[in-house]
Image: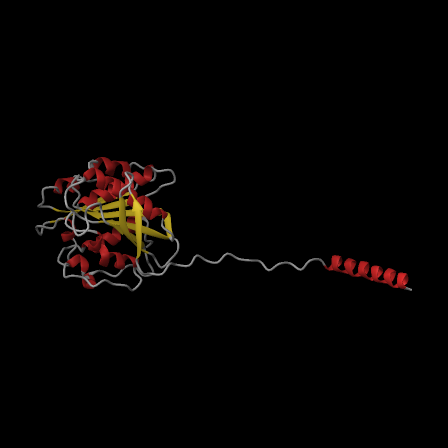
Length: 285
């Protein structure tokens, strides 16, 4: 009797297995990749290292989209990365603002509106020995800092490494174009252009040599320059000409570097900055 029951159970198990085979294994639910979420808008502290081992401090302002183009902002000799805070928030365009301190470039009340729907990632940093203002000239060191900054910016989470631009004032104006040219030479690196305010050849490399490197790239990159027509270094910008470049001068006096960014300047320099972003392709019309 027991043998008969065992045979029956084996027979039933075979039937059940055959039935399951006909039905097949239920398909697994497809797992779709989640869309990349933007990072929180609050600035993030970033520490990075220049080519000679010097540690540098930066701030990353994430965009509202991921990945997003990144603007690398470089300061002038009398200050540090904090000079850029209000403009960084303006470019980021996520509703944040600093407290300002009365100077025009840190007072957003006169800033033009960013193009609708645009939000850029922004990276600022302080050149070595420049916390609160640079202590003494260090052209070779600052050149290494500028190069390291653009490389770090391109590698940040949430950044489109193929859509990098540099903007800087005075020593930062030279740093912006030097960093951009450097990034173009790196394997897989790209930089779409540089906007320099009052460059003076402060970081060893010739501004015009760097400008030609960017304009002779394939495709050509944008090279823009803002300057005060009355300052000694005006000829550096004034001599810039040709396709994929623009030199804009003002004659209001004593407008070196950040002082070019003021509400009385005509045309509005920040409106022109937006035009540079359009021309370079980091903002779409």
